[in-house]
Length: 194
Image 1 (cartoon, rainbow, N blue to C red):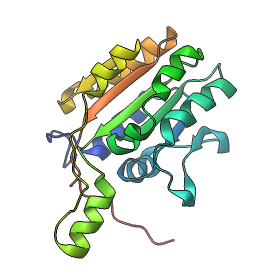
Image 2 (image 1 turned 90 degrees about the vertical axis):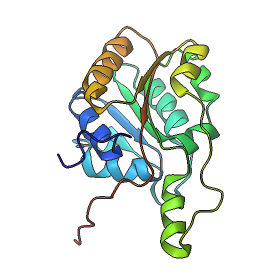
Image 3 (image 1 turned 120 degrees about the horizontal axis):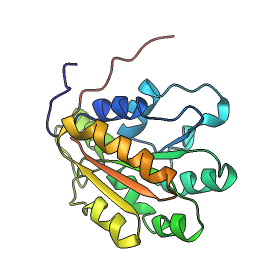
Image 4 (image 1 turned 90 degrees about the horizontal axis):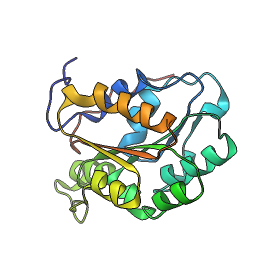
């Protein structure tokens, strides 16, 4: 609630809103980085195959090809990938593969204009970032250029509408990219000791 109306949109707010629209049997694929922090904290998983991430490998770029593969394995289930903009840029060509292979997915991109987790660690350790900020393309427009549906969200009040549309378009057999404009300085949730 504290960050609900903030612009740029808080990554945790975006993923929490997504959870409200995820169909029951969906498969969620998360990339590593800040998006993984929010996904792990908010996505409920009822079955082992309902959530996949890179684990200890922390391999950037996993969400998009992982989501396409999951859709090919589970064509009857909704598959949602969650990635940061830096990770997505590593495998952006696989967006075309999703369409060519007939594996329509939903890809949520948390676009903070950099390698958010690396940036956070550099600032904490050295007081400033080095090489972690960059200009990302408009991923919604790139999605449209590939022949997918592109939705760009800059206002947190539009998240429900965007995710509802993404689910509806995907049910019609379309690949959908929902680009959420976020910030790399979103406060993380408190770490819980187990």
